[in-house]
Image (cartoon, rainbow, N blue to C red; front, top):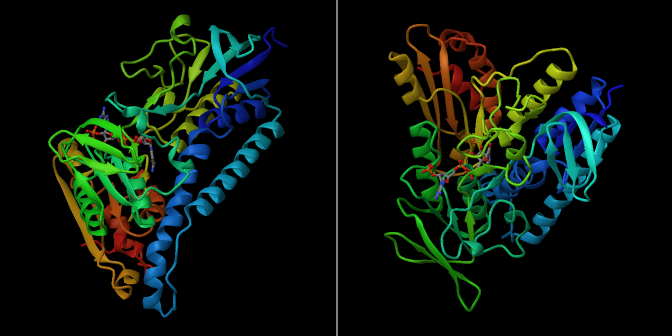
Length: 448
Ligand code: NDP
Protein backbone atom coordinates (compact mmCIF):
# COMPACT_ATOMS: atom_id res chain seq x y z
CA UNK A 1 0.00 0.00 0.00
CA UNK A 2 1.47 3.37 -0.97
CA UNK A 3 1.37 6.40 1.31
CA UNK A 4 -0.78 8.32 -1.12
CA UNK A 5 -4.53 8.71 -0.69
CA UNK A 6 -4.99 7.41 -4.23
CA UNK A 7 -2.89 5.76 -6.91
CA UNK A 8 -4.60 7.94 -9.50
CA UNK A 9 -6.52 11.19 -9.20
CA UNK A 10 -8.36 12.17 -12.36
CA UNK A 11 -9.58 15.72 -12.88
CA UNK A 12 -12.57 15.72 -15.23
CA UNK A 13 -15.14 12.98 -15.77
CA UNK A 14 -15.55 13.32 -19.52
CA UNK A 15 -14.87 10.71 -22.18
CA UNK A 16 -11.11 10.48 -21.55
CA UNK A 17 -11.28 10.80 -17.77
CA UNK A 18 -14.04 8.24 -17.27
CA UNK A 19 -12.33 5.66 -19.48
CA UNK A 20 -8.98 6.18 -17.77
CA UNK A 21 -10.56 5.94 -14.28
CA UNK A 22 -12.50 2.81 -15.05
CA UNK A 23 -9.59 1.00 -16.69
CA UNK A 24 -7.07 2.02 -14.03
CA UNK A 25 -9.47 0.75 -11.35
CA UNK A 26 -9.97 -2.51 -13.23
CA UNK A 27 -6.18 -2.93 -13.14
CA UNK A 28 -6.36 -2.63 -9.35
CA UNK A 29 -5.53 1.05 -8.86
CA UNK A 30 -7.25 3.13 -6.16
CA UNK A 31 -8.84 5.87 -8.22
CA UNK A 32 -10.74 9.10 -7.55
CA UNK A 33 -12.20 11.36 -10.19
CA UNK A 34 -13.34 14.93 -9.59
CA UNK A 35 -15.99 16.59 -11.74
CA UNK A 36 -17.40 20.04 -11.06
CA UNK A 37 -20.26 19.83 -13.57
CA UNK A 38 -21.89 16.60 -14.71
CA UNK A 39 -20.37 13.13 -15.18
CA UNK A 40 -20.06 12.41 -18.90
CA UNK A 41 -18.29 15.56 -20.05
CA UNK A 42 -18.83 17.53 -23.22
CA UNK A 43 -19.70 14.56 -25.43
CA UNK A 44 -22.50 13.18 -23.30
CA UNK A 45 -23.78 16.34 -21.64
CA UNK A 46 -23.44 19.13 -24.23
CA UNK A 47 -21.87 17.77 -27.36
CA UNK A 48 -21.98 14.70 -29.56
CA UNK A 49 -24.89 12.92 -27.90
CA UNK A 50 -27.53 15.67 -27.52
CA UNK A 51 -26.39 17.09 -30.88
CA UNK A 52 -26.94 13.77 -32.66
CA UNK A 53 -30.40 13.50 -31.09
CA UNK A 54 -31.21 16.97 -32.43
CA UNK A 55 -29.91 15.90 -35.85
CA UNK A 56 -32.29 12.94 -35.79
CA UNK A 57 -35.11 15.22 -34.69
CA UNK A 58 -34.33 17.69 -37.45
CA UNK A 59 -34.20 15.07 -40.16
CA UNK A 60 -37.88 14.27 -39.66
CA UNK A 61 -38.64 17.55 -41.40
CA UNK A 62 -37.40 16.01 -44.66
CA UNK A 63 -38.53 12.47 -43.91
CA UNK A 64 -42.12 13.58 -43.26
CA UNK A 65 -42.19 15.48 -46.55
CA UNK A 66 -40.58 12.63 -48.46
CA UNK A 67 -42.97 10.09 -46.94
CA UNK A 68 -45.75 11.46 -49.13
CA UNK A 69 -43.88 10.31 -52.23
CA UNK A 70 -43.73 6.85 -50.69
CA UNK A 71 -47.50 6.65 -50.35
CA UNK A 72 -48.04 7.98 -46.85
CA UNK A 73 -50.71 10.56 -46.17
CA UNK A 74 -48.88 12.87 -43.82
CA UNK A 75 -50.87 15.75 -42.44
CA UNK A 76 -49.14 19.10 -42.04
CA UNK A 77 -46.90 18.55 -39.06
CA UNK A 78 -45.86 21.03 -36.42
CA UNK A 79 -42.57 20.88 -34.63
CA UNK A 80 -42.43 21.33 -30.86
CA UNK A 81 -38.98 22.44 -29.73
CA UNK A 82 -39.80 22.23 -26.02
CA UNK A 83 -40.72 18.55 -26.32
CA UNK A 84 -37.57 17.58 -28.22
CA UNK A 85 -35.32 19.70 -25.98
CA UNK A 86 -36.79 18.14 -22.82
CA UNK A 87 -36.67 14.60 -24.19
CA UNK A 88 -33.05 15.09 -25.21
CA UNK A 89 -32.19 16.41 -21.75
CA UNK A 90 -33.94 13.46 -20.13
CA UNK A 91 -31.80 11.11 -22.24
CA UNK A 92 -28.66 13.03 -21.29
CA UNK A 93 -29.59 12.65 -17.62
CA UNK A 94 -30.16 8.92 -18.11
CA UNK A 95 -26.73 8.54 -19.71
CA UNK A 96 -25.11 10.63 -16.99
CA UNK A 97 -26.55 8.14 -14.49
CA UNK A 98 -25.12 5.21 -16.43
CA UNK A 99 -21.68 6.81 -16.52
CA UNK A 100 -21.86 7.37 -12.75
CA UNK A 101 -22.93 3.76 -12.24
CA UNK A 102 -20.03 2.44 -14.32
CA UNK A 103 -17.62 4.36 -12.13
CA UNK A 104 -19.32 3.11 -8.95
CA UNK A 105 -19.24 -0.46 -10.23
CA UNK A 106 -15.49 -0.14 -10.73
CA UNK A 107 -15.09 1.29 -7.21
CA UNK A 108 -13.91 4.65 -8.50
CA UNK A 109 -14.53 7.43 -5.96
CA UNK A 110 -16.49 10.19 -7.68
CA UNK A 111 -16.08 13.63 -6.13
CA UNK A 112 -18.66 16.09 -7.42
CA UNK A 113 -16.49 19.11 -6.90
CA UNK A 114 -13.86 21.24 -8.55
CA UNK A 115 -10.30 20.04 -8.02
CA UNK A 116 -7.11 21.94 -8.73
CA UNK A 117 -3.51 20.85 -8.68
CA UNK A 118 -1.74 21.83 -5.46
CA UNK A 119 1.53 19.99 -6.10
CA UNK A 120 2.99 17.36 -8.39
CA UNK A 121 1.19 14.70 -6.35
CA UNK A 122 -1.42 16.75 -4.56
CA UNK A 123 -4.86 18.11 -5.44
CA UNK A 124 -7.07 20.58 -3.63
CA UNK A 125 -10.85 20.30 -3.64
CA UNK A 126 -13.19 23.31 -3.62
CA UNK A 127 -13.72 23.01 0.15
CA UNK A 128 -9.96 23.17 0.76
CA UNK A 129 -9.45 19.44 1.37
CA UNK A 130 -6.09 18.28 0.08
CA UNK A 131 -5.58 14.79 -1.25
CA UNK A 132 -2.46 13.07 -2.46
CA UNK A 133 -2.10 10.77 -5.43
CA UNK A 134 0.86 9.00 -6.95
CA UNK A 135 -0.29 10.18 -10.34
CA UNK A 136 -2.66 12.90 -11.50
CA UNK A 137 -4.46 12.73 -14.83
CA UNK A 138 -5.81 15.99 -16.23
CA UNK A 139 -8.81 15.34 -18.47
CA UNK A 140 -10.56 18.70 -18.27
CA UNK A 141 -11.44 18.90 -21.96
CA UNK A 142 -12.06 22.14 -23.82
CA UNK A 143 -14.31 25.15 -23.75
CA UNK A 144 -15.97 27.14 -26.56
CA UNK A 145 -13.82 30.01 -27.73
CA UNK A 146 -15.69 33.30 -28.04
CA UNK A 147 -13.64 35.96 -29.86
CA UNK A 148 -13.71 39.39 -28.23
CA UNK A 149 -15.99 41.92 -29.86
CA UNK A 150 -18.51 44.42 -28.45
CA UNK A 151 -21.70 42.65 -27.44
CA UNK A 152 -20.18 39.16 -27.47
CA UNK A 153 -22.02 38.54 -24.18
CA UNK A 154 -25.26 38.37 -26.18
CA UNK A 155 -24.04 35.35 -28.10
CA UNK A 156 -24.53 31.76 -27.01
CA UNK A 157 -22.22 28.81 -27.56
CA UNK A 158 -22.75 25.07 -27.91
CA UNK A 159 -22.99 24.99 -24.09
CA UNK A 160 -26.26 26.92 -24.10
CA UNK A 161 -27.77 25.92 -27.41
CA UNK A 162 -29.33 22.72 -26.05
CA UNK A 163 -31.29 24.66 -23.44
CA UNK A 164 -32.88 27.41 -25.53
CA UNK A 165 -36.24 28.42 -24.10
CA UNK A 166 -37.69 29.08 -27.51
CA UNK A 167 -36.74 28.02 -30.99
CA UNK A 168 -35.22 31.16 -32.53
CA UNK A 169 -36.88 32.26 -35.76
CA UNK A 170 -33.63 33.77 -37.06
CA UNK A 171 -30.21 32.41 -36.12
CA UNK A 172 -26.80 33.77 -37.00
CA UNK A 173 -23.97 31.28 -36.58
CA UNK A 174 -20.39 32.51 -36.38
CA UNK A 175 -17.80 30.05 -37.69
CA UNK A 176 -17.62 27.58 -40.53
CA UNK A 177 -16.55 24.41 -38.77
CA UNK A 178 -18.23 21.34 -37.33
CA UNK A 179 -20.60 23.00 -34.89
CA UNK A 180 -21.59 25.79 -37.29
CA UNK A 181 -22.54 23.41 -40.08
CA UNK A 182 -24.22 20.87 -37.84
CA UNK A 183 -26.38 23.47 -36.08
CA UNK A 184 -27.09 25.30 -39.32
CA UNK A 185 -28.61 22.05 -40.59
CA UNK A 186 -30.53 21.46 -37.36
CA UNK A 187 -32.06 24.94 -37.09
CA UNK A 188 -32.78 25.11 -40.80
CA UNK A 189 -34.74 21.85 -40.68
CA UNK A 190 -36.71 23.17 -37.71
CA UNK A 191 -37.71 26.14 -39.83
CA UNK A 192 -35.40 28.86 -38.48
CA UNK A 193 -33.77 31.29 -40.91
CA UNK A 194 -30.06 30.49 -40.65
CA UNK A 195 -27.10 32.63 -41.67
CA UNK A 196 -23.57 31.28 -41.32
CA UNK A 197 -21.02 34.05 -40.96
CA UNK A 198 -17.41 33.16 -41.50
CA UNK A 199 -14.22 35.16 -41.09
CA UNK A 200 -12.63 33.39 -44.08
CA UNK A 201 -13.92 32.01 -47.35
CA UNK A 202 -13.88 28.32 -46.45
CA UNK A 203 -16.12 26.02 -44.48
CA UNK A 204 -14.80 22.90 -42.80
CA UNK A 205 -11.14 23.54 -43.39
CA UNK A 206 -9.30 20.22 -43.47
CA UNK A 207 -12.05 18.36 -45.34
CA UNK A 208 -11.75 17.56 -49.04
CA UNK A 209 -12.55 20.58 -51.19
CA UNK A 210 -15.12 18.89 -53.44
CA UNK A 211 -17.00 17.52 -50.46
CA UNK A 212 -17.03 20.93 -48.75
CA UNK A 213 -18.27 22.54 -51.96
CA UNK A 214 -21.05 19.99 -52.20
CA UNK A 215 -22.19 20.72 -48.65
CA UNK A 216 -22.12 24.44 -49.37
CA UNK A 217 -24.23 24.03 -52.52
CA UNK A 218 -26.76 21.76 -50.83
CA UNK A 219 -26.96 23.98 -47.73
CA UNK A 220 -27.61 27.04 -49.90
CA UNK A 221 -30.29 25.14 -51.84
CA UNK A 222 -31.94 24.25 -48.54
CA UNK A 223 -32.08 27.95 -47.71
CA UNK A 224 -29.06 28.52 -45.44
CA UNK A 225 -27.32 31.85 -46.11
CA UNK A 226 -23.55 32.17 -46.03
CA UNK A 227 -21.52 35.34 -45.53
CA UNK A 228 -17.83 34.88 -46.17
CA UNK A 229 -14.89 37.13 -45.27
CA UNK A 230 -17.21 38.81 -42.80
CA UNK A 231 -15.64 39.04 -39.34
CA UNK A 232 -17.95 40.05 -36.51
CA UNK A 233 -17.86 43.71 -35.48
CA UNK A 234 -20.53 43.80 -32.80
CA UNK A 235 -23.83 42.49 -31.50
CA UNK A 236 -26.37 44.83 -29.94
CA UNK A 237 -29.64 44.03 -28.25
CA UNK A 238 -32.79 45.74 -29.49
CA UNK A 239 -35.81 46.79 -27.44
CA UNK A 240 -37.86 43.86 -28.71
CA UNK A 241 -35.18 41.41 -27.53
CA UNK A 242 -33.83 40.74 -31.01
CA UNK A 243 -30.14 41.14 -31.80
CA UNK A 244 -28.44 43.19 -34.48
CA UNK A 245 -25.24 41.69 -35.80
CA UNK A 246 -22.77 44.05 -37.44
CA UNK A 247 -20.25 42.48 -39.78
CA UNK A 248 -17.33 43.85 -41.71
CA UNK A 249 -18.34 44.56 -45.31
CA UNK A 250 -21.95 43.35 -44.95
CA UNK A 251 -25.37 44.74 -44.17
CA UNK A 252 -26.41 44.30 -40.51
CA UNK A 253 -28.38 41.13 -39.77
CA UNK A 254 -31.24 40.92 -37.27
CA UNK A 255 -31.49 37.66 -35.38
CA UNK A 256 -33.15 36.09 -32.37
CA UNK A 257 -30.05 34.12 -31.42
CA UNK A 258 -26.37 34.28 -32.28
CA UNK A 259 -24.41 31.06 -31.88
CA UNK A 260 -20.63 31.38 -31.79
CA UNK A 261 -18.86 28.23 -32.98
CA UNK A 262 -15.31 29.47 -33.42
CA UNK A 263 -13.40 26.47 -32.12
CA UNK A 264 -12.70 25.19 -28.63
CA UNK A 265 -9.79 26.01 -26.35
CA UNK A 266 -8.18 23.62 -23.85
CA UNK A 267 -9.48 23.96 -20.29
CA UNK A 268 -6.19 24.69 -18.56
CA UNK A 269 -6.77 28.03 -16.87
CA UNK A 270 -6.94 28.27 -13.09
CA UNK A 271 -6.25 24.65 -12.28
CA UNK A 272 -2.74 25.12 -10.96
CA UNK A 273 -0.89 23.60 -13.90
CA UNK A 274 1.66 26.30 -14.53
CA UNK A 275 2.30 26.75 -10.81
CA UNK A 276 3.64 23.18 -10.59
CA UNK A 277 5.60 23.52 -13.83
CA UNK A 278 3.34 21.74 -16.34
CA UNK A 279 4.28 23.13 -19.75
CA UNK A 280 1.52 24.41 -22.00
CA UNK A 281 1.75 25.06 -25.74
CA UNK A 282 0.93 28.35 -27.47
CA UNK A 283 -2.79 27.44 -27.51
CA UNK A 284 -2.82 26.72 -23.79
CA UNK A 285 -2.90 22.94 -24.29
CA UNK A 286 -0.95 20.62 -22.00
CA UNK A 287 2.15 19.38 -23.77
CA UNK A 288 2.41 15.63 -23.45
CA UNK A 289 4.60 12.94 -24.95
CA UNK A 290 3.28 9.84 -26.68
CA UNK A 291 2.67 8.23 -23.28
CA UNK A 292 0.42 11.16 -22.29
CA UNK A 293 2.98 12.33 -19.73
CA UNK A 294 3.42 16.07 -19.16
CA UNK A 295 6.62 17.91 -18.30
CA UNK A 296 5.94 16.98 -14.64
CA UNK A 297 6.48 13.20 -14.49
CA UNK A 298 3.59 12.46 -12.09
CA UNK A 299 1.08 14.49 -14.13
CA UNK A 300 -0.51 13.13 -17.29
CA UNK A 301 -3.20 14.46 -19.61
CA UNK A 302 -5.60 13.01 -22.19
CA UNK A 303 -8.32 14.32 -24.47
CA UNK A 304 -9.14 17.81 -25.68
CA UNK A 305 -7.02 19.45 -22.98
CA UNK A 306 -4.00 18.22 -24.95
CA UNK A 307 -5.42 19.51 -28.26
CA UNK A 308 -4.19 16.61 -30.36
CA UNK A 309 -7.34 15.50 -32.20
CA UNK A 310 -10.46 16.97 -30.55
CA UNK A 311 -12.67 13.91 -30.94
CA UNK A 312 -14.33 11.76 -28.28
CA UNK A 313 -13.13 8.37 -29.56
CA UNK A 314 -9.57 9.73 -29.57
CA UNK A 315 -9.88 10.90 -25.94
CA UNK A 316 -11.24 7.46 -25.03
CA UNK A 317 -8.28 5.75 -26.71
CA UNK A 318 -5.87 8.05 -24.93
CA UNK A 319 -7.51 7.34 -21.56
CA UNK A 320 -7.41 3.61 -22.22
CA UNK A 321 -3.78 3.72 -23.40
CA UNK A 322 -2.75 5.72 -20.34
CA UNK A 323 -4.31 3.30 -17.86
CA UNK A 324 -3.22 0.16 -19.69
CA UNK A 325 0.34 1.49 -19.87
CA UNK A 326 0.66 2.84 -16.34
CA UNK A 327 -1.50 0.42 -14.34
CA UNK A 328 -1.99 -2.60 -16.59
CA UNK A 329 1.60 -3.35 -17.55
CA UNK A 330 0.59 -3.10 -21.21
CA UNK A 331 2.45 -0.17 -22.79
CA UNK A 332 0.15 1.27 -25.45
CA UNK A 333 0.65 4.21 -27.77
CA UNK A 334 -2.32 5.71 -29.59
CA UNK A 335 -2.09 5.57 -33.36
CA UNK A 336 -3.33 8.85 -34.85
CA UNK A 337 -3.12 7.71 -38.47
CA UNK A 338 -6.35 7.45 -40.43
CA UNK A 339 -8.72 8.60 -37.71
CA UNK A 340 -12.16 8.76 -39.33
CA UNK A 341 -14.35 11.78 -38.73
CA UNK A 342 -17.85 12.94 -39.55
CA UNK A 343 -19.82 16.13 -39.76
CA UNK A 344 -23.49 15.60 -38.93
CA UNK A 345 -24.66 18.24 -41.32
CA UNK A 346 -27.68 17.83 -43.60
CA UNK A 347 -26.59 15.71 -45.45
CA UNK A 348 -23.72 14.38 -43.35
CA UNK A 349 -20.07 14.00 -44.28
CA UNK A 350 -17.73 11.12 -43.47
CA UNK A 351 -14.01 11.11 -44.14
CA UNK A 352 -10.86 9.15 -43.46
CA UNK A 353 -7.29 9.57 -44.63
CA UNK A 354 -5.79 12.13 -46.95
CA UNK A 355 -7.79 14.62 -48.99
CA UNK A 356 -6.96 14.86 -52.68
CA UNK A 357 -4.82 17.97 -52.06
CA UNK A 358 -2.95 16.41 -49.13
CA UNK A 359 -2.26 13.23 -51.11
CA UNK A 360 -1.06 15.18 -54.13
CA UNK A 361 1.36 17.13 -51.94
CA UNK A 362 2.60 14.13 -50.05
CA UNK A 363 2.62 11.38 -52.67
CA UNK A 364 2.85 13.25 -55.97
CA UNK A 365 1.25 10.64 -58.15
CA UNK A 366 -2.30 9.73 -57.19
CA UNK A 367 -5.51 8.49 -58.79
CA UNK A 368 -8.86 9.90 -57.81
CA UNK A 369 -12.20 8.16 -58.31
CA UNK A 370 -15.54 9.81 -57.72
CA UNK A 371 -19.15 8.77 -57.79
CA UNK A 372 -21.63 11.62 -58.01
CA UNK A 373 -25.09 10.15 -57.66
CA UNK A 374 -28.61 10.69 -56.44
CA UNK A 375 -29.60 8.22 -53.73
CA UNK A 376 -32.51 6.05 -54.86
CA UNK A 377 -34.56 7.31 -51.93
CA UNK A 378 -34.00 10.91 -52.98
CA UNK A 379 -34.98 10.15 -56.58
CA UNK A 380 -38.40 8.80 -55.62
CA UNK A 381 -38.86 11.62 -53.12
CA UNK A 382 -38.16 14.13 -55.89
CA UNK A 383 -35.32 15.49 -53.81
CA UNK A 384 -32.68 16.89 -56.09
CA UNK A 385 -29.78 16.29 -53.75
CA UNK A 386 -26.72 14.46 -54.98
CA UNK A 387 -24.29 12.41 -52.93
CA UNK A 388 -20.58 12.48 -53.69
CA UNK A 389 -18.11 9.73 -52.83
CA UNK A 390 -14.44 10.20 -53.50
CA UNK A 391 -11.56 7.76 -53.25
CA UNK A 392 -7.93 8.84 -53.28
CA UNK A 393 -5.43 6.17 -54.32
CA UNK A 394 -1.64 6.13 -54.19
CA UNK A 395 -0.77 5.52 -57.87
CA UNK A 396 2.52 3.82 -57.00
CA UNK A 397 1.03 1.19 -54.65
CA UNK A 398 -2.69 1.13 -55.54
CA UNK A 399 -3.36 1.69 -51.83
CA UNK A 400 -6.50 3.61 -50.90
CA UNK A 401 -5.23 6.56 -48.85
CA UNK A 402 -8.42 8.57 -48.50
CA UNK A 403 -12.19 8.21 -48.62
CA UNK A 404 -14.47 11.23 -48.53
CA UNK A 405 -18.22 11.06 -48.66
CA UNK A 406 -21.23 13.30 -48.42
CA UNK A 407 -24.72 11.88 -48.65
CA UNK A 408 -27.36 10.09 -46.59
CA UNK A 409 -25.82 7.95 -43.84
CA UNK A 410 -22.29 8.76 -45.03
CA UNK A 411 -20.79 8.43 -41.49
CA UNK A 412 -22.41 5.01 -41.02
CA UNK A 413 -20.95 3.75 -44.30
CA UNK A 414 -17.59 5.42 -43.78
CA UNK A 415 -16.97 3.78 -40.41
CA UNK A 416 -16.88 0.34 -42.04
CA UNK A 417 -14.92 1.52 -45.06
CA UNK A 418 -12.38 3.17 -42.74
CA UNK A 419 -11.30 -0.31 -41.64
CA UNK A 420 -10.14 -0.99 -45.19
CA UNK A 421 -8.22 2.28 -45.38
CA UNK A 422 -6.67 1.70 -41.96
CA UNK A 423 -5.69 -1.82 -43.03
CA UNK A 424 -3.94 -0.41 -46.10
CA UNK A 425 -6.15 -2.18 -48.64
CA UNK A 426 -5.86 -1.37 -52.32
CA UNK A 427 -8.26 -0.20 -54.99
CA UNK A 428 -8.05 -3.74 -56.36
CA UNK A 429 -9.29 -5.07 -53.00
CA UNK A 430 -12.28 -2.75 -53.17
CA UNK A 431 -12.91 -3.84 -56.80
CA UNK A 432 -12.71 -7.51 -55.81
CA UNK A 433 -15.55 -7.05 -53.32
CA UNK A 434 -18.96 -7.85 -54.77
CA UNK A 435 -21.44 -4.98 -54.56
CA UNK A 436 -24.30 -5.15 -52.11
CA UNK A 437 -27.22 -4.08 -54.24
CA UNK A 438 -29.13 -1.86 -54.04
CA UNK A 439 -27.30 0.30 -51.54
CA UNK A 440 -25.45 3.58 -51.52
CA UNK A 441 -22.36 1.92 -50.04
CA UNK A 442 -21.96 -0.23 -53.16
CA UNK A 443 -20.65 2.87 -54.94
CA UNK A 444 -17.41 2.31 -53.02
CA UNK A 445 -16.72 -0.97 -54.82
CA UNK A 446 -17.94 0.23 -58.22
CA UNK A 447 -15.73 3.29 -58.64
CA UNK A 448 -14.34 3.53 -62.18
P1 NDP B 1 -13.93 24.15 -35.75
O1 NDP B 1 -12.49 24.16 -35.45
O2 NDP B 1 -14.53 23.03 -36.47
O3 NDP B 1 -14.27 25.47 -36.59
C1 NDP B 1 -14.00 26.73 -36.08
C2 NDP B 1 -14.49 27.76 -37.05
O4 NDP B 1 -14.41 29.03 -36.44
C3 NDP B 1 -13.66 27.83 -38.32
O5 NDP B 1 -14.52 28.15 -39.39
C4 NDP B 1 -12.70 28.96 -38.02
O6 NDP B 1 -12.31 29.66 -39.18
C5 NDP B 1 -13.55 29.88 -37.20
N1 NDP B 1 -12.78 30.68 -36.24
C6 NDP B 1 -11.75 30.27 -35.47
N2 NDP B 1 -11.31 31.28 -34.72
C7 NDP B 1 -12.07 32.36 -35.01
C8 NDP B 1 -12.09 33.71 -34.59
N3 NDP B 1 -11.22 34.15 -33.68
N4 NDP B 1 -13.00 34.54 -35.15
C9 NDP B 1 -13.89 34.09 -36.05
N5 NDP B 1 -13.92 32.82 -36.50
C10 NDP B 1 -13.02 31.96 -35.99
O7 NDP B 1 -14.64 24.44 -34.35
P2 NDP B 1 -16.11 24.19 -33.79
O8 NDP B 1 -16.29 25.24 -32.76
O9 NDP B 1 -17.10 24.06 -34.88
O10 NDP B 1 -15.96 22.79 -33.07
C11 NDP B 1 -14.96 22.63 -32.07
C12 NDP B 1 -14.35 21.26 -32.12
O11 NDP B 1 -15.25 20.33 -31.60
C13 NDP B 1 -14.05 20.77 -33.53
O12 NDP B 1 -12.78 21.16 -33.97
C14 NDP B 1 -14.16 19.28 -33.39
O13 NDP B 1 -12.93 18.77 -33.04
C15 NDP B 1 -15.15 19.10 -32.27
N6 NDP B 1 -16.46 18.73 -32.83
C16 NDP B 1 -16.58 17.56 -33.51
C17 NDP B 1 -17.78 17.18 -34.05
C18 NDP B 1 -17.88 15.91 -34.80
O14 NDP B 1 -16.98 15.08 -34.70
N7 NDP B 1 -18.91 15.70 -35.62
C19 NDP B 1 -18.98 17.98 -33.88
C20 NDP B 1 -18.75 19.22 -33.17
C21 NDP B 1 -17.54 19.55 -32.66
P3 NDP B 1 -10.98 29.25 -40.00
O15 NDP B 1 -11.34 28.08 -40.84
O16 NDP B 1 -10.71 30.49 -40.77
O17 NDP B 1 -9.94 28.96 -38.98
